[in-house]
Amino acid sequence: MDLLKIPKQNIPNVSELTQRIKAHLEQHFININVLGELSNVKKSSNGHIYCILKDSDAQLPCVMWRNQAQRYASLFSDGKEVILRGSIQVYKPQGKYQFIIEEMEAVGVGNLQIEFERLKKKLTTEGLFDASHKKPLPRIPTKIGVVSSRTTAAFQDIISTLSNRWPLAEISLYHASVQGARAAGEICQALEFLGKSNDLQVIIIARGGGSLEDLWPFNEESVARTIHSCPIPIISGIGHEIDFSLSDFVADQRAATPTQAAVLATPNRDDVLASLDECAERLHGRLEQRWNQAKQRVDYLTKSYALKKVQERLQISAMRVRNNRQSIEHHLSQLTQQNKTNFIKLEHRLKRMNPNEALEKGYTRVWQNGQWIRHLEALNLESFVEIEFKQGRKRFNP
Image (cartoon, rainbow, N blue to C red; front, side):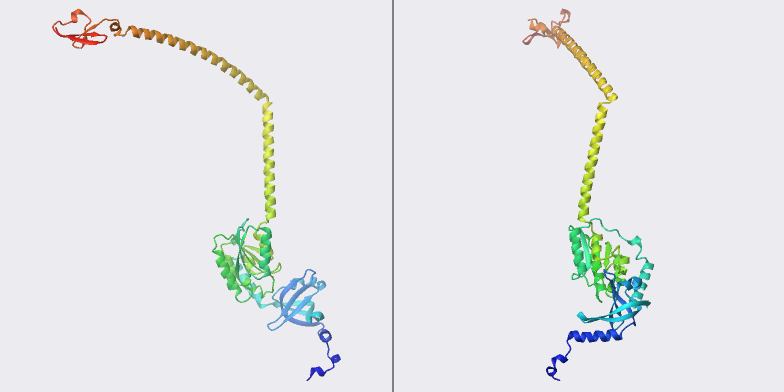
């Protein structure tokens, strides 16, 4: 068939074709029911709820507008099997269709949700979630480990938050897949490696939001047990605020988002600086208060009656000391003079008692057999004698 021979006016453009599809679908798929499992549930800021309804072979994008979402909000959760009633709507500008939910009814629990509840019950029974196992987070960490994918927005949010809050900390990333079949093994390997570090104070495991399937690696039993056995405190920042994983329950601290995990891991530098300023100001105030109190005490004491009496006593004691000093000095002077006189007298007496004084005057001594002969009767005329002069002794034979 030669398409160029068909008149152009007989060929519908994209808008016309899309309008025919829109009219056909929206006319024939009105107020219908559909069965499936909820996935990737998200609530927008304006109150609408978006999700995916799926089975093993296909997916159907769905939305429930705000006026209806307020009524059914509690029924929306990943993995839940539901029956939805509503209509197909085609969004013409993008050529996409979605199911507009009017009513919903829970049927049962999806397979992943069943497995989640089974593992949660098992690990709870074993005590892996007990508060007694929770390790305290460091107040001022200097090195933080992060287990995440380097290409994710979650990791960039962590880096940005840490840089703003506490740039003093060193960040050590261990890249690991956070989705898919290999993710659980890589996460365990990362935690085991970082757990052997001697200088890490805290570890953050993180990824952004997603469906129950997307977050499933963080529900694996192996990951939960590795977190529990890690000697370093772990903060779990998995998904968004409404998302919960087994990693959240077993971690030492759960954060609603990766950004909040970075907030929980570090102090705010502005708060620390403000606290230091406050402490310095408080210390200065206390010192000034103590100074004033001491000054007032001194002023009070200087004017007190007791101090005046002490001063009077000190003055009297000073006068007594001065008088005693004069008396002692006079007595010492008299005693010194008296001792000097006595010394002179003794010196004169010693000089008079000097046996050599007679020799000095020209007298001699007679010695015989080593004895000083003082009497004539003691002299032996038959033995030699020695005559002692001032200049020495001279021996004479009989």
